[in-house]
Amino acid sequence: MELIFEKRYKVAIIGSTGKVGEAIVNYLYDNTDWELMLFSSTYRSEKNDNGKHLIPIDYLDCNSLTNKFRLLHPDIIINTAAMTNVDAGETDRAGARSVNVDFVSCVCVCVCVCVC
Image (cartoon, rainbow, N blue to C red):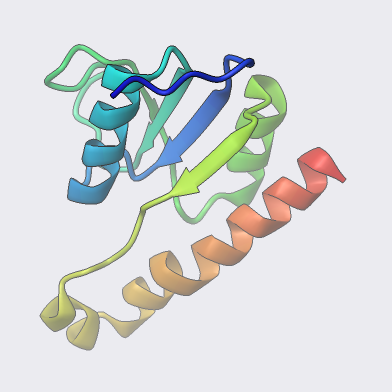
């Protein structure tokens, strides 16, 4: 089912190479003509397996993310980045907090700085 919108949205998808992010990317590629900006911290090259351009991201660098949002001007930001491995989260609490809490705060600040 193709979605029809009056505007061609620019969508930033953070965590685009994870399971949830990849599902969203595939759905939007198949059903919209939106411009997708795919952010990933674990990219291995500039293109993923589907040939889609990936933008590297460092979850600890809020200024870099702000600069990228200012440059790209996304209309929609979808954050699917998370540390989901429960065992790893128990042994690396600081790492889990960094991605699951601090980075979410960073995204909110970036949006306020770029939009407000």
